[in-house]
Length: 319
Image (tube, rainbow, N blue to C red):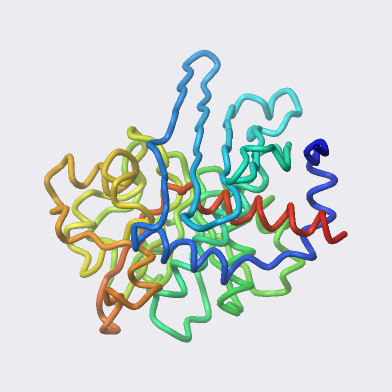
């Protein structure tokens, strides 16, 4: 029996030009919504001093070739020591034998990438068509991935940015300069939300930063920052106001993220939720009118980790 591939981020990043996972990730969401996946509840460790969090996600698709176990952490104070806040790895196993086939020490970069891709998929499926601009809320790693993935998938020609720290917003704008599109920083969040039709939230806020009254008809919001039970970027009333609320996994979103907060506040009824895979597969309607407000709450599902880990593995064996 051969040893599993052991790849660090340098190894993995050298293979990324060989992989394309949009279609396979869409199909994975569809299969998940059909009940063709096994995704246990998220394992989680939360730390206070220093602050940090660890998520353990694992699962497989029925009839697939592999199962995945992913450990991803976020320790914000790492930046003070010149270390990346995100750390972790993905472990890929043969589904028929349990033999480990790849150990991907990705420093949470694959998690960031698959989150960016899923965000863009959700926005493309639910936002009004032919939008030329998007608004990014936040200035961290995920803001960068969401910006790049949305520009790539939706052919946007401009971005607007808001962040609590204006200097960090300026760094983000500089980091995205190679996209060769118009990028502007806004300091007035309320005014920015009111003029935006596509908003992507990427913060770790624990109290809502976007108020329901600010969001105008026709707006779509993809929220990716709230991946634990206590985080909350959106006013829970907004999810009650929205015509359509989409979860990446209803069972998971009931326990964490924006849907969790809205259910807890009794602003949203569970029967009004639909899954992203249902929209992508055509079994449930997404946006049906240009004036509808739509929200996608993405907490991150193990099938995304499976798709991107398999893609890296296959690129490696064909390299």
